[in-house]
Amino acid sequence: MTFINPYTFIDELAFQHQRILQLFDRVREGEAEERDETFLELRRLLAVHEAAEEVVVHPRARSSITSGPKVVGERLSEERAVKRLLAELEGLGMQSAEFDAKLEALREIVEGHIEREERDEFIALRNELDDDEAARMADAVRVIEAVAPTHPHPGTESASANLLVGPFAAMLDRARDAVAVRLGQGAH
Image (cartoon, rainbow, N blue to C red; front, side, top):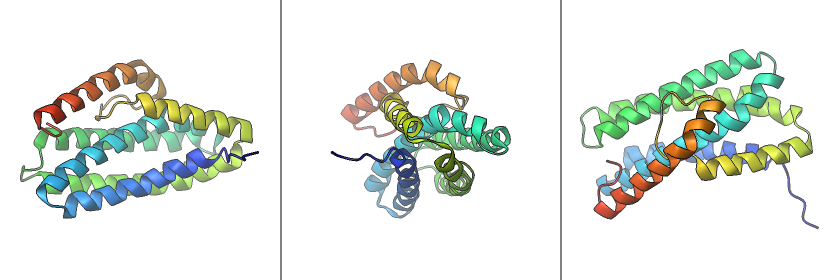
């Protein structure tokens, strides 16, 4: 019999945080072609990751952790700022003189967001969830990540907005990504 740790979804989200920070480094330090591909990967991971947290993690944290509504409200505000900056970066393109400064500003917001989220939500959720609920949340995270948009959509920081707009936006995003690859246009 194989034992499956239902808390691995929290570990996976924390691992994604580390991957996001690594991608920031690769975008900053890479050669032009590698930077473009890495930025696409960073943008996609941020969009999918935040959607999963907004739909699955934040609602549970809001209802169960100390000061949940305040903590989640602050994280959602940070996520809104991340989506706005990410959308600006996507619109600028990597050749823009503003790109590197905005990328660094984005990284600073994301680093702080990650630290507070892991400290204020992830640890508390590990203490709150029983095995069955953790397993259900892990399944929900996998579903959301499979259908989440791959581009930032500022204004969809709530679970209901993600569930309403997310699948349609995801379909359009994935089509746009496929067309851009076929046309050799990267993110733009």
